[in-house]
Image (cartoon, rainbow, N blue to C red; front, side, top):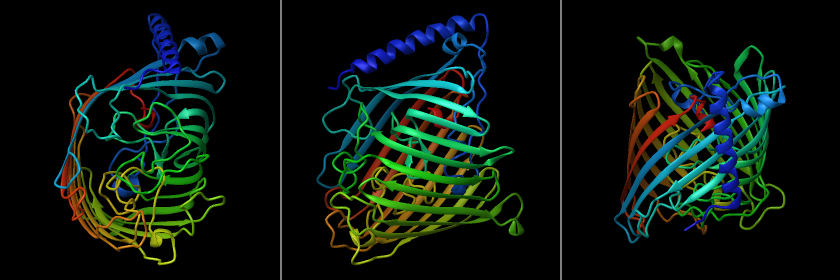
Length: 468
């Protein structure tokens, strides 16, 4: 069992003091929190969900240093999760229970400066057996996941320290886990005055906190840290990323990003979605979306990352209405015999084989971008949502090229489907169920199914999704 570190104990003490101080101040002066316009990371795919920015929610402005230390907001989330995986192959079934959440504090803003702290906890209370899902932390994980100083001026926001990220290929918006992936470094976002739809971003990240760890490390999401991928983990100095994003609700969207993953690869990504209003019928608007990824060598590469040359093409067709989205997405990764993994694409900070990707939707099983080998996929999605209820249904078919590389799967044809049902019981209480089924000839897992149930309760001021 992991034990609570001295730093985490100290952080909890500091948070407790801040909570007490804020509560005392609230008796005389109610705190106010303005919530940022939320912009979804994959609005270009579904274009029907609320969107949210990486920038933090604005807290109360104060005029003195003492008020800056005393007048803040306390918020957080309590979570309970059950995650089951049952295989027809030779690996053991997994049954995981995890309970915990987070307690966060945001200071008031003084001359543009503010700070934030966030403590994250997960525990199984002795309910789990020996075979558990490793990426769902449950074994007494306790970590000071956020500790940052922020400066805001006009449309610019700068953060330094431990923080969450909202970028396509390194993100903290992992709904399937109890504690998100978090990052340590410095970064900034900038929005043009008068145009909140256009955002520029840049980050230099040095360390990373995996989902199942209670510390920040100079590693990535490779094997053996993540059991669902074969790509090897590398010790590095993190990554640098620069991006620009235009995202207009129920309108066109586009984004472009560059990543330099230290000692592994460079990656460029461009994508967009365009509504075709000339073909609008009733309240439904057709759309077309396209995405492209290029991956190539970087300097001072670590083994086995050599001779990287990957291309990924994806096209989406569908329609949006106020409550419905239907789309079909096709993805192709061409084979290149002389390249690493025969031209297969990989992302060092993305999880698992059938997980979240930026290419088709935020939901799993969307495309083959994490299969680490060339091939093709065809995916279909149906999304329904209203003020409280959301349902997502998906099917994906993979047709993979066999490759003579050590990190490729021996499986060529895979079919997968999933269902997600989410309901807001109240404005703060949410219950969610996800069921997945994967039909694969891979003898280790065989066909398998997975079910995830999550209940979460948000307390304190309601913040932008990227703040939790």
